[in-house]
Image 1 (cartoon, helix red, strand yellow):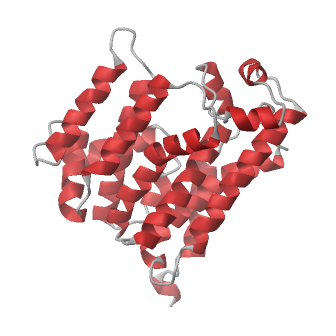
Image 2 (cartoon, one colour; image 1 turned 90 degrees about the vertical axis):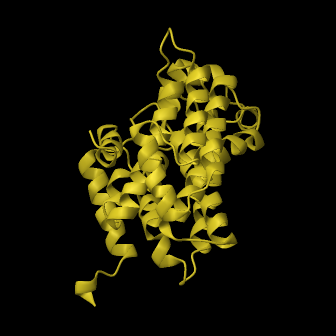
Length: 284
């Protein structure tokens, strides 16, 4: 399979919420985004779907070497070749890719997060770094665009964490900060047992409020000059915020109903966001 086909197939097969917003992008930008998210999926799978005979740290180290290869113009695998094309077209930087791998290594080292500050470090690496790389592809540059990526990345990752509490607990992982759980008198043991309680709902509500504030701050940073280049990210934001709204409508009982969107639901959310963020040429 050709590299430019390999990356989008990974995203589509995994049912990513990011697949549909990318369809609204120009071809070269879309291909670069597919490559970026295919890389994210590959390194994430190394940690989440560990093979009993393969050391995940060695696999992540091999990806560090591949990132070095890419930024030396010598990629060695299909995703690497696709990233290299994006690097040449959009001046991608090495640092965000290395930060993403740093985040994956945190998943190997930590199964509990003592406080929000530690969790935000994780979010910076696995989500904000993605946004910083994406900004180059979008053509959104400067300090304000970087701050936008910071707030939206943390909002996305906190949303992910709340959506995936049940799945993470099956791997003995709890991303909800222990200090927030303790303040709400919620028990990590209840999370592992799949046991809802009003105290746990309070903790989840508090984290939801933090995510909402990051969504708000990201949106507030979108100036008229930045808006055209950030439209794909804003479409992604509308889709992701839908997950947070589901959690809120469930009164923060994440055990009662799976928090998910069907493929048709993702398409619908993407189309609604498209018409909210774009003014198509035939409407002008």
